[in-house]
Length: 442
Ligand code: HEC
Ligand code: HEC
Image 1 (cartoon, rainbow, N blue to C red):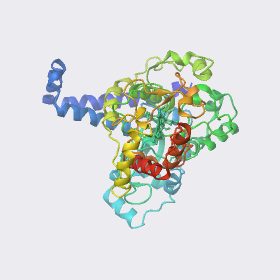
Image 2 (cartoon, rainbow, N blue to C red):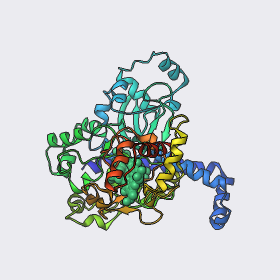
Image 3 (cartoon, rainbow, N blue to C red):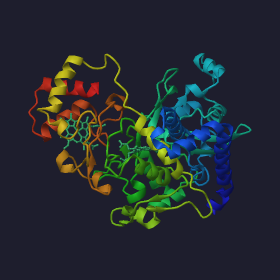
């Protein structure tokens, strides 16, 4: 029924998309001709073509909801509470404001402290300008009619140039302030989510509250496991979406390559309208919820367009184009890092798995929990039952929340200490600190 009610909205979205594409092509006949020419001569694809693809992928990453308003507004009705949230409260749950999307007079007013951050109407104005990173609102006559989410919600932050939470976009940086559980919990209609997980709404709210900032549980909607054996949340940290080129398998447990996971997330987590195939999810012992609901066999509703698949190629290219950021000068000791580099490749055995300069294994980059010296809970929630060797570029950009999939190690020093014990390395205190300085330099 909900789907029927949303048919109209989706048709409007789909029509909007095709009109935009049509007018762009129509307005640039020469370019269109060149594109057709390059189709038949792919070897002549130039830098301009590549730049267009990257720009298209960036637009998808930042702004495309794949029609997921049907879920976030149509089912969960999340726009209703968001319409009453002040900018201060929005920043408080980790949402970020894109400075470059604001009108110059708004920037001036913000800088001068003349914007009322306690006025929910300001939130609607920000949404109307596409200025809330990763949240796409439809505002009509000053009222918020619907919201959807994009990849940038979790995988972008801002540089705080104007104020904490207000700055220039940093695509690919995980938002470790974002409290996804708290935001979802605002929804006035959590019943469908609770039903999916086979719990009541208060129990679901407890699960969402346990996630905390910087975390999300992509697997709970497949296996229904909300807690680890020790009773703590089963959510993982939001990882960076930069520095992924050259890395074979992705996610903490290696579900697939970047484009596999993009299709997975767009369909199964964001609830966009598309197609997804993965018969591994039919394994009812491992993925009872996914198997029961046919999550490995998703198609758009009858007569509705696929709003995801056509966007995957450019989105893939864009993500692979995001290099890991370089650490700021002065944030590590270069001489100590140089000694750490030798240890990393030698006595500390790190490079046996983290092969420079990719810092994951060229090839099948998965390991057992035993090899790592940790429990296998999260690994067993994935098809291969293993952990993926994390690429290590730009570690400084996601220090908040800790390291390893669940943030169990608060500092890089704790990570090194763990390897020292597990691998019996016998490193001295100064060698450990050299290794840490090297990790900080990546
Ligand atoms: C609600 C937050 C959220 C949203 C929205 C989201 N992701 Fe993620 N993403 C995560 C989490 C959490 C993981 C880790 C999942 C795991 O390991 O089980 C992840 C993992 C990834 C990875 C793997 C990174 C690595 O180190 O291998 C990529 C790539 C990625 N996401 C891209 C995307 C793209 C593209 C979109 C939009 C289509 C998207 N994500 C939307 C939270 C999110
Ligand atoms: C057996 C292969 C292997 C070896 C050897 C190894 N690592 Fe790892 N490393 C991994 C895997 C797999 C992960 C992901 C663990 C997780 O997320 O739970 C990881 C994660 C990390 C992380 C956390 C990254 C993040 O973003 O959370 C750091 C830092 C790290 N390793 C550094 C090192 C250092 C330093 C050494 C040498 C002392 C080392 N590793 C040796 C496989 C290895």
